[in-house]
Image (cartoon, rainbow, N blue to C red; front, side, top):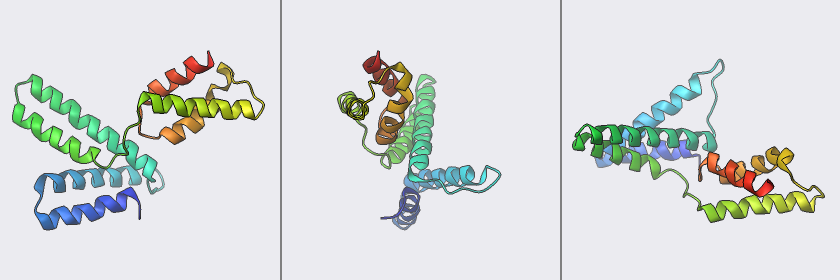
Length: 154
């Protein structure tokens, strides 16, 4: 199926043909951000899907923050434009998980450690967080994930 970046590039071409200006500009900006991130280090890297998702989340959040500032300043049109861009970006993000789904994932990982003969305590928080974070990747707030893990291990 290709990477998320491939999908963004294909969609950019489709938006160009369709004359969808907002989507085209938004996807082009995001691809620019990806390019900048890939070239910013000492050695160029290729962002994987998880890194691309993380970047997309930040880009969408930036637009939503800007929209809030515009709304507070009475600039409804500009706020609407920012929200439209955020929604275009969010369409590329994996569906969010519910707290119940995340709790179930945490419980599964803890049960897995127990099955392996380890009785998890706060000391093993990292051993629980690592697989949970990998499974949840970009679909739930990381801070809340660590709170859930902490409450389960306490």
